[in-house]
Length: 372
Image (cartoon, rainbow, N blue to C red):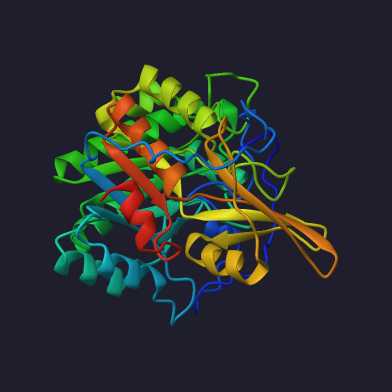
């Protein structure tokens, strides 16, 4: 979520379990590239991990939205996570469709995901993105937004799919939108929300993290938080990828940065409409290449590399370094302490809950720290 336009980086495979997520998978339902948000904190001198117990939240957010993916035919990682944690997962967003320039849709939601969510009494949203000739295709979304016929067709198709699939609603995840299309994107959301509500369906909109409404920030300006928030049922704020493989090493979602992101969001939208984005992955940097690492893979990595976890108290983020074959590796990630700190932020801003990218990279300790 940082400063450049779309930068496509394919990462090495995540080492945990049978899944083979790439950077596109481990990134948010959200950007595969930095957004225009400048980091508010940089890695400081490491300090020892605090001996005190992690900050505990006084109240549990009522909405826990997990992103459900199937990247290949036998990918059951999201399914296993949903099945094991349906006691705390209230909603799933199933990566389902890509919009086409004429407003038609390609793709389909996971039948297993829909069936499992229904059996577990978990609400389900169908996610639509603007992947075209490139990931989060700017020209594609511009074409749709500037063609009233395509816009109307897209709205009709999304509502029809939500009704047909008996879903709770739609999760709109359009990214890399031209800044000049800000008003038209808000209008699309207004029209889509109205038609969904007529059919007793809801709308979740995923929005990039930002610290202000700055027209010069081309990755984020198209998202009018206040305008979108007045129409959508929920905004899933992608408060992750503060740092990533496209830049120098740093925390995926430091406490000061997430705090600033949420402070701005809560100044524009009521807290009970906001979902804080939570990453279930970390990033590793080395001269051999940068990659995403699943939350559940990190304990084994620590053990195998005899690495010592460090804690940056200013950023409330863990990290570690180790050497392998003479190459230094640096990993920033989430752990129980950093997740507990974010849990407290949900209370501070009276948020509706969390949007977790993504199901299948987690382990039981992730859920224990965040919501149990």
